Length: 93
Image (cartoon, rainbow, N blue to C red; front, side, top):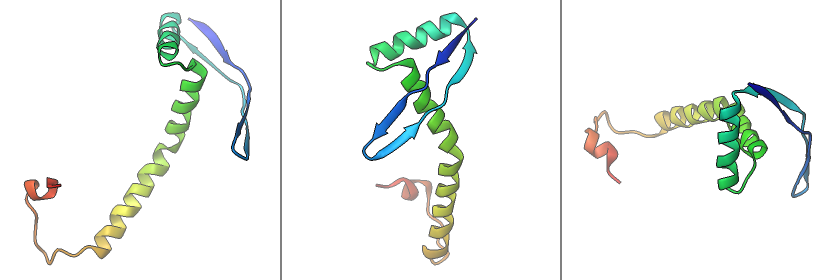
């Protein structure tokens, strides 16, 4: 096991400037090297992949909450007259 440092970078997205902090994490050397190889094959970096994962991880609960809000809104506005749909009817496109 060894430690990898993720260096601070300044990212400019359109007119938004995002300051990033350093993150240090430890993992098995073979796993890190395999992840780096995969990132290279995908023409990206392990740092970029980690940032993407971290953002998705942090936002997961928000997305779930938003989805439940939409479901509750639909429940209050969509009326079926008490009719229950079959599985096939629910899955029709």
